[in-house]
Image 1: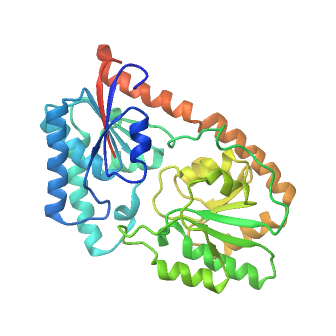
Image 2 (image 1 turned 180 degrees about the vertical axis):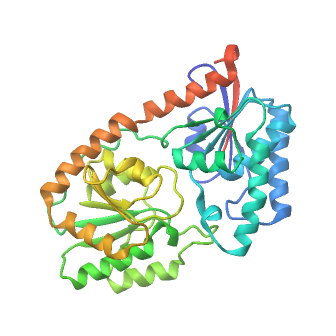
Amino acid sequence: MRDRGAKVVVLTHVNYLEEAIKQEGFQLIPWHISSGSLNPFREFVAFLHVLRVYRRERPDLVHHVAIKPVVYGGLAARVCGNIPSVNAIAGLGHVFISQRRAMRLLRRLLLVLLRWSLNGKDTMAIFQTSDNRDIFIEAGIVRRGQTTVIRGSGVDPKEFSPQPEPDSVPVVILATRMLWEKGVGDFVDAASKLRERGVSARFVLVGDPDPGNPACIPRTQLLSWAASGVVEWWEHRNDMPVVFAQSNVVCFPSYYGEGVPKVLIEAAACGRAIVTTDVPGCREVVRNGENGLLVPARDREALVNAIETLLKDPPLRARMGARGREIAVQEFSEDLVVRQTLAVYRELLGPRWPFVAAIVPF
């Protein structure tokens, strides 16, 4: 959009990417919002901030990314005269899968707000899987004609490229936020069981806890696992191509309610065989027997057996890795995702395309 002459404003919670955003030539507006906050006053203030920014900037198009920005930005867009809005819903997340009473009550409120946010004039909802889109349509949250599916946020095949497997003790990695629902506990249990079977391998967790999420694994638990020697914990890494190059197998036993997990796309682009769960999002990337193995969610025995199968069969890993690379390049490249997203903008803006001002709240 910038390269096509648009003024792009990014409204987001500012973190370590602040300078990177500014260096791209985008105007950055800090947004004080927490993904895990349930404080009504704090959330109302966050909504009012979006409303003030929209009234001041008067954007021609807004693109909301993730549930809270979709709700607050979608409502603000309607209040400000139905600003054309794109609403990207990557996955359903904790609030949609938790059965806790508080989460069920929050889910009911969220569904009402989403109906308001997604049904305005000139709105389009982007889902990463058909399964998630169907859930929203069947619940009456959005009309099918106002939806599209774009599978994931893409991968740069040049940055994430195949490298030879290390020839030392095999390494199995799980790279994700450290949440129970990402299957981290199942992974640690699998590592323990495989060690008991005499399988020689290193098992590595990559990623930090997410304190704002109710399913966050405490740092003390992660340190305890690492101290026991069952797994290693590499914490957060900014050099994921290097991490994948140090691995032999990538594991992702999530039952979180994913969109299309970026880690799976990146692992496939790096030519690594994958073990993941047979759930929406994960099975968008991994085709069982082609570029990895799918196991039932929360089935720890099946997870152990699948990891063991790949660890003991290097030629199988090589074939699956090569096929994964083909799938990533052909179906999940960044260029493809960008073209599909710009087509949505073009549909909403019509003759105003491409000379517009756009705001992207995260």
